[in-house]
Every structure is written in structure tokens, then in C-alpha cells.
Amino acid sequence: MGKKPTYSELEQRIIVLEGTLKETRRLQAKLKESEVKYRFLVEHMRDTVWTLDIQDMKPTYVGQASEKVLGFTPEERLNQHLSEMVTPETYARLMEVLTGELAKEGSTDPDRSIVIEMEYYHKDGGTRWLENRVNAIRDDGGAIVGLHGVSRDITERKRTEDALRDSERIYRELSTIDMLTQLYNLRQFDIQIKIETDRSNRYDQPLTLLFLDLDDFKTFNDAYGHIEGDKVLQRVGEEIKECLRETDFAYRYGGEEFTVILPMTTQADGVTIAERIRTRIKEADFSPSPGQTVRMTVSIGVTQYKGQEEIKAFIQRADRLMYQGKERGKDRVCGE
Image (cartoon, rainbow, N blue to C red):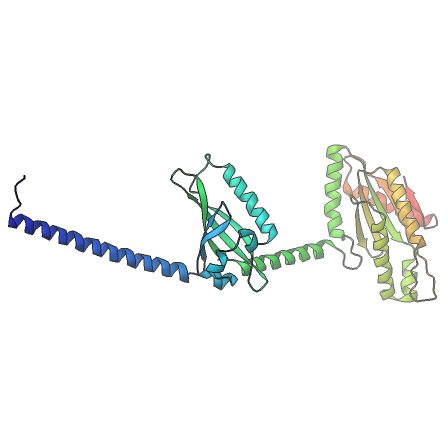
């Protein structure tokens, strides 16, 4: 048997054990304090902390902020499948993102985060947009077993962005569309004719231009007034669009003048389209009141672009041909 410790040695061991016990208790108290602080932060933060099991796509933990943001308690969330929480479009996009991320496994940073905006259902029946920062939860072997995320409500930001996009769209339309006829305006014509002539030169493709002018429009305005005259211009714009293909562009050039750009179109085909427009306008009824029958006619100049020529010369030739049609009796298509 070994030598028994002396009283002094026992006393010293007791002092060491008491010190160790005291330190252990201090660390336990600090750990508990940290746990309380962490839980307080998680449960009172505006963002929602969550974890998700990727096997059944159900959450395993949801922070208290879920109820404030989306109306569902954490307990309710734990019983929901992810597909019940978000819109079908969001769920499909999320599955696509996750599939892509899983395909990257082994060739990229395992600690990477992804940020994805998702549209969630609110308990009140509406939806909210949340931005999710997501990380993988891995087992001891490094395989992904779940997801950990923090969700932030960005609904107001999304609404602002949508409003801004709508404003930009309206501005673009106002800056390119003639509000009376709903055809493109002169500004857009100047842009598009440059694009189309460049394309014609680059690829040696035919390009044809129509110039149209209503015959005796001033006489109609003098007889029936400008309000009725505006109705005529609106109707002419509709008739022109009805005669064109999806690849063609129609413009109100100014007053009662219109132009049509016909990409990848020869002059012969351009004359066919011009005759279609002329006939359609001639057959339309522009009567300003019941019991009247008022017809309008149009003179049209048709010309094909000559490779490398100046745009100004191209436009002037179409304009000149249109006036030749007027000089030859109106209601006719004139080409070279």
C-alpha cells in the first residue's frame, strides 16, 4: 500500500478542489448568463432565426420573431412543410438554388452563405418578402443535414423597388410612345432607324421604309374640329398596326405623317404592305357622327435602303416619294 497522505497534504488537496469547484461554478454561471443573453437576443431580434431539416423540408427551430413578421408562432411553424410557407414560385426557385448548391459540394467553400429573397404567406392571407441568409448544417463527416438561416423582412423595400420599376417603365413609355396614336414617337424613330441601317450594313439585309401622309386632313379638321381630327389619327394608328408584322415598327412622325420601318424587307414586299395599309384606311369609316359617312385616304412613299448611304438621304427619298403620290392624285403608293 502507498504512503498515506499527511494532514497537510490532504488540506492542500481540499484547497485545490475547492478552487476548482469555485472556478467550475463561475464558468457555469457565465455560460448560463451567455445562454440567457443569446436566447434573449434570438427571441427579441427583428430578424427570424431558423433551422431546417433538408430531409423532410420542415423547420427544427424557429425564432419568436416569426410571429411578429408572419403571424405564425414558432410552434405552428414546426408543423409546416416549407412548401406551405412560401408561394409556389418561391418554392420552385428555392429548390433550383438548393439543387445547384448541392451540385457544388466538394468544389467550393463548405462554409459559404447564400442570400435568397423569398415570398412567404402571412397568417392574415397576404404575403411578405423576406431576405434569407442561409448556411449549411453539417454532420461530423461534412455532409449537409440541414440549413441554418436568418430571415429579414424586406417587404417595404420590395414595394419601393416595384414602384420604381413601374415608374421607370411609364417613363420609358412616355419617352418613346406618342400618347395620341400609341405608336412610337419621332424620338424613337431616330434611334431605331440608326439601329436598323447599321444592321442592314453589317449583315447585308434588305431594309425598307414607308412614309405616309393623310390626304386632305386639314379639310377634315376645318370641317369637324380638332377633337374629331385626333380621333382620326388614333384610328389610323390602329389600322397601321393591324397591317404590320411583329418585326415591323410604326411611328407618328408628326402631325398627320407616319413612318413604318420594315426590317429584312425588300421594296417589293414593302409595296405589298403599303397597299394593305392604303386599302384598309380607305375602307375605314371615319364618320364624326351617326348618319354620316366620311372616308379618308393616304399617300405612301416606299423605298429600300441602299447600303452605306446616309440615313438622311434614305428618309428624304421616302418623303419625296410620298409627295409624288400626292402630286399624282393621292390615295396611292409610290416607289422607285
